[in-house]
Length: 338
Image 1 (cartoon, rainbow, N blue to C red):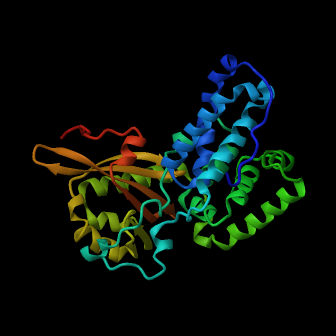
Image 2: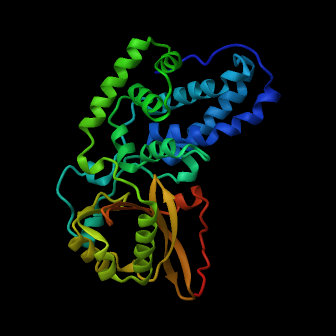
């Protein structure tokens, strides 16, 4: 298989080590998510990693090497999955043209399955109990713009950059995992950094995070969305804000066009139920649209938000019920007071 790295030999007690495999699931999911750009593919990759690990526990070279051994297997799984696959991106990067007009006809174009970056809940990919400074690095590394930029890298360069710059592995550790020299690993890291810098605009760079301000802004945004007060919503948008809605290829730029969308093609969102989330290192929310008489709702979209200077600069609505199941969200919520 292309890109496969040997997974080691040795002996150890499968019964003793098997329960420890689950301890690494969250961090492995985060690693595979950054590599693959898909929460669904990351879950599948981690499951395959655990299956391979369980089948070959007797070849592990000592219990102390468990974490690096699991990363070796996970890297193999991701390299296999990426072999020959096109990169994932967001609609604004895939369109290759100007923003769409805010009309119903703009929904005619649908992206092929697997074309767009998918979101991930923070609790599925970020560590718990980490040092605040380290957690800040981890949070930036799962933001949609960063994950999209990672997809420009060849798979092995992608692995090197994530292991070195995000997970803070030493050069000799990465070289050992990839079965290459330290010089080759460092060279791959330099090329990866240069490519990443070329594909990240100034707008994509991390902005200072003020948790209290974001919490307040999210609350105001959700209140306006649930009341479907378009004027209040637009007041919270940057004038050059971007909105996109995978799987549709359409994307909008500018608060005026977004407002037109809300009152036109998006009017079916009026009366929705929303719940805040923490997703891709940013505030987010899940949306259930009204589905008929009697106050029933249906899972509709998971919205990723990006804030800058006290305003929303990007909103990406990932449509479809599949993410609700993956994220453990109810299909039929019972909103309080309705």
